[in-house]
Each structure stands twice: as C-alpha cells, then as structure tokens.
Length: 133
Image (cartoon, rainbow, N blue to C red):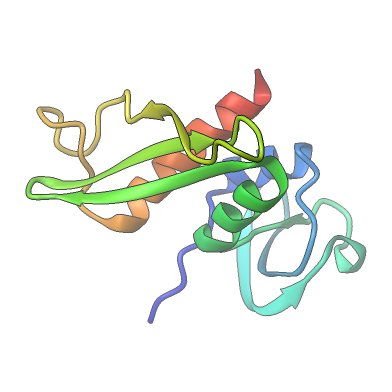
C-alpha cells in the first residue's frame, strides 16, 4: 500500500500550528527545493535546519482531530469523492458540520475528486484555512 504525504505547503502550515509527535516523513532542503524523505520516524527534536515534519495524510487527519478538534471526513458518491469538516462545539455535541466542500474538484462540474487521497488533501487544506483565521 502506498503512503500519501501532505504537500510541502501543508507541512509548512502544520509547522506553524505546532504539529508535534512522531511522523514518518520530513521535507529537507527547504524551501528552495523541498525533498520528501519517508519511511523513518521523525520528531521535531531530530530535524536539522530547514527541515519540516511531513506526516502522511492520515497522520495529519488524526492530529487535526485529536489536537484541534476538527474532523476531516471523506465520503464516496457515485461521481467521486468529496470531503466535509466537523468541529466539536462542546463535549456533548460532537460532529457539528461546519463545511462541506466549497471548491471545485477535479471534475469541475461536480466538485468531486477522483481519489480518496486527493479529497482528503483538499479537506485538510480547508481545515488549515479555518485554523489560520
């Protein structure tokens, strides 16, 4: 099974949001020519200058849910994959939907993506925008 990692731009935003923990990738030679290294375990303390943690998409999704209380959900329709975001209002109301995809996907007519991973990446982008505001 192939591992899918966040983009370099997503990794930069996650660093700004203080992503921490053990992940399986890093971007090195940043920002001039970001190169993804994966397959080993990395943490902030073992990075060198200009290196950035690069979690897999599922690791970023888990971190957003556990640390920022934002769930990025992916769903499958007959015409492709879409995404949604939900946020906990408090301990009693889990899963208040705050956004469904509001951008064009790969199929400009439907706003859907052709793969689960591309839809998840688009949902992570939207979650990061919400956290920046």
